[in-house]
Amino acid sequence: MSEPHHPTRDQIRLEAVLTALGHPLRMNVLQVLAEGGEYPCGAIVDGVSKSTLTHHWRVLRESGVINQRASGRTLLLSLRREDLDARFPGLIDVILASYTPADAAEPAETR
Amino acid sequence: MSEPHHPTRDQIRLEAVLTALGHPLRMNVLQVLAEGGEYPCGAIVDGVSKSTLTHHWRVLRESGVINQRASGRTLLLSLRREDLDARFPGLIDVILASYTPADAAEPAETR
DNA sequence: GTAACTGTACGACGATCCACGTACATTCCC
DNA sequence: GGGAATGTACGTGGATCGTCGTACAGTTAC
Image (cartoon, rainbow over all chains, first blue to last red; front, side):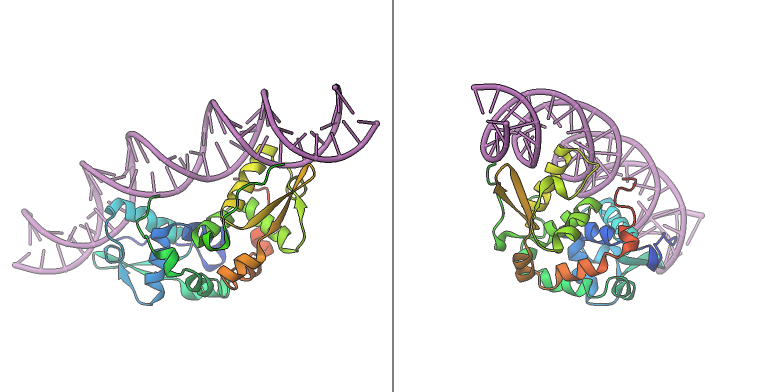
């Protein structure tokens, strides 16, 4: 696996982060990764094709929300917590706290 | 002017708010309205056609970010601060604090 | 009443988003 | 080496976004 391109900390833009998190699947990924640790691409979401997932990984990676690290034949995903907290202090915490079960009710809703 | 439709406080969804603010023009509007007070539609942004503005007002209104109140021949816009703070405590403050001049540098940038 | 002003409604257009299937590159394991 | 596993790359098709011009509706002022 090749190392994909990531923005540096300074290149992370607020609008890109907000846009990235304005999609239920990607918000769901944030929730999972916020627990900490690294996950292979295929271990977080299911019910979606591989190529669709690749699309969402790219949005999350290029906005600076996640990091993708090659390990064997998998790419390990993790949240760029330190970078996000340094750039936008409190933002991730507030978003996670604001995303109530009422919002998360239908992950695969009609949209 | 007719009163347009607004979501109730409970109908405001985090993803919709994040998506709404994931556009530089609308983020700009948030900054202006966060100062407080009410503004006519045409007094916040310029360099964009009226119909384009109407589109962005709808996005902001339907996501629950702003309120539009009819007054004479104008619609007065204001931030739904109380509703947003009640629903997502701290979110607006953090977003405003995170939106540094570096991000806001080019309001009418190449997009 | 009539003209000017403010903003919406509607339709159009190109660009982007989102989901998918297929093909391919890389790695692991036999 | 050959096959299986993991994910990306590419192209496609439909939906939505962002912008605009034009037309229209409500209000104000003469």
